[in-house]
Length: 426
Image 1 (tube, helix red, strand yellow):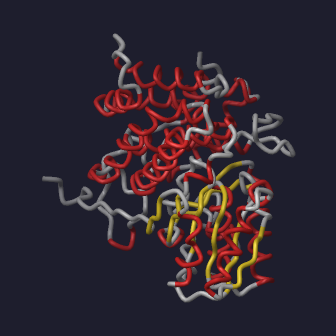
Image 2 (tube, rainbow, N blue to C red; image 1 turned 90 degrees about the vertical axis):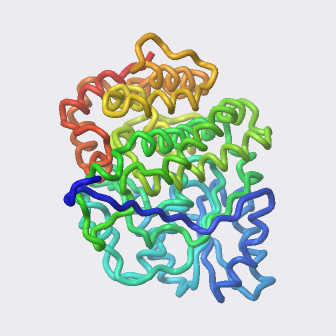
């Protein structure tokens, strides 16, 4: 039995889900069930150029729904881009519902627009402490349908909106159960045009979601919370474990194929399912060190331009920034739950033999995969050196919501070691 002061409750939430080829053709019908009349479709310029968001908007007319497309979402959103999107939505509104078509950036932009058009205050009021004020919304949000065109973020399943806070040069997030989309529409056909570089980087996000939630602190190791204190991230638990394990199994058979053979429909479908399953896992259990480190890596980038991404500004794509310290992060967390790290490695590489040193199994599996799919060789390859480690540590330490999910206590020195050893991975 757990002690009276330790947690005995875990929570689980997920959106309604529609999965399969052609699912995106039914969004007009799905929205008609909510009785909506005016819908804003949120996307980014690259996805808009494919014509898909307009196609989604056009199909709604059959159900007497007026739909407009906003194509100003920024890849890797910033506080400025989210505020601009919300202002545009306010001036052209009111809207009865929102549809996000695109990657995690478009979905997160739609979450922020929904929040800021239904609740008072400014964006930074809702951004997590200590970067923002961490305020909770007062009013329920409007229905949000998330239609991912990339396989990675799992944002269609989660309660999280991620953004760059420009003045602080750090990524942070907004986290609240009401941000979870009402309906996730997963149509693998939409991911067939995803370039190899995007497939690789966003796929590493799926992988780290699954690994971090699977190795997160067990939910009963937290102090007991009052009902009003419960947060979406409650630690690893039996239900999130199930989703994470299945995501790892799907990735084992599909990740390399999807990167190398983008027209492989089965690999694309398995990746889409893995992204959603991993989202259902980490969206409840939480993530820890690799994601905490990813935020300052992305926020402090100077001149790195990744393959197959927009070239108009420097960036380290979110999934790539998460991956770059993951091997070292899991070396650090191994001692807290050796059996989980070994199980995760065996699911991801079922034909690999366990090395003589068990702590090396998961990091080795990860670096082998990263080399195969052309992920950069550590943070040095995206422009960081030893002199940058203190500022990276400072940024990661601001992510206390994430670090609290780590199965080990994390100090500044611990993170400095992880960053330093991640300058070059192989």
